[in-house]
Image (cartoon, rainbow, N blue to C red; front, side, top):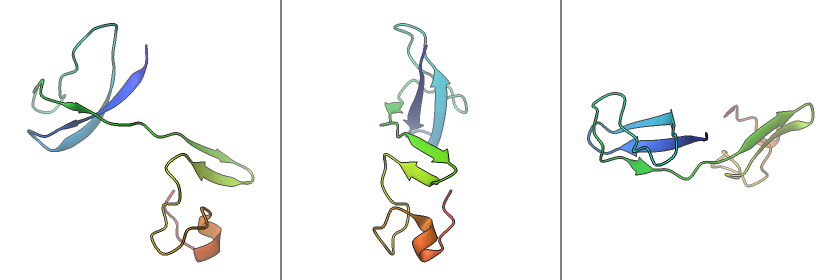
Length: 74
């Protein structure tokens, strides 16, 4: 039973919901069924740092490590 991420264009809210089988997701804020499934990303934090499948959260560099530029995005 995976948790999926969705966006509701009606109320402009991102949300996560547990989806069972062929169940259709509903926005928890406005109850709209016209929601869009988002591509989920994976991240991992360990003693050696933070990694993300989304890449660097820093817009000013491409190192992938916020210790390089001092940004605190996590």
